[in-house]
Length: 152
Length: 152
DNA sequence: TCCATATGGTCAAGGGGATTGACGATGACG
DNA sequence: CGTCATCGTCAATCCCCTTGACCATATGGA
Image (cartoon, rainbow over all chains, first blue to last red):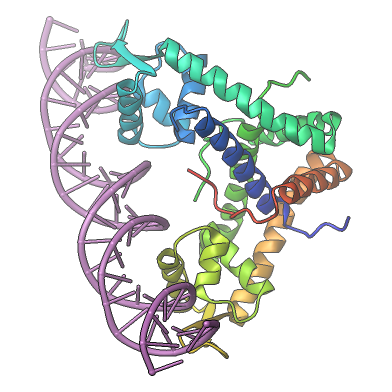
């Protein structure tokens, strides 16, 4: 297969879009709340860190604290996230995932996994493992501190 | 390497972001106009098709004709795109790339190519070829008619 | 200890890029 | 021809993010 120089980033964007659409369709089919990717990345962040603040989240997402604050506000209202007083800083509020939030993460992981399975069926599981490794290598080489948000 | 189920879409988003940032940095370094991905996808579309209309473009990008119209307006103003009377439909205007537009496409292809080269150096050129094939397979399996625009 | 400065969070205003809705002009087809 | 679809534009609005200002609390040096 002759590869067109410079085409891979475009393909990656399309592939990402396809997998996100796929996830979206599954979530919609089962009636789950349709959260945006920003919400998903927020969950993922809160899973790893305890007593994270809104500013921490904003840094992680690569957005302003005001934007992050609004996301947190929504997620709290919808029952996915809690804000409790911060244990050591009385200015701050410590963020946490509710059971509902944790359940959503697990469900989304499972559904993304199914999307991966479909791709694996297409190209073979070993190839998918390789892609995983290669993507990790690329991300690591960029320092791993890339905000997950696509630029658009 | 143990792969976390459901993580590939996230990695793909980050990888895409990294490659776009890379391209962006290169374009900025050489003083080129900083066009958004939507503009790039517009160019790519206009390269393939002759006498395309704004509505055709909107369909391709998966946005409304009003939004597409605005993009075309900008690109015309900046000298990348022309709007001439449509040969067979007097309601419509046929879009085309100016030499400046074509040059931008070639330049962007080259710079994306360099980004690919850096990745190839990291994981090996043969692996990159495989990824290309696999991404093509995924995109084809979705009908190839996926709007390039990421959902966010 | 006190004060200067840095930082977490919120409120308010504004902007970029999309959407919906309405419309005039032309095309397509019975 | 008359009806209905389609290309393009104008206008209003929306969503999500940004910038800027501000208060309350932390922090660290004199």
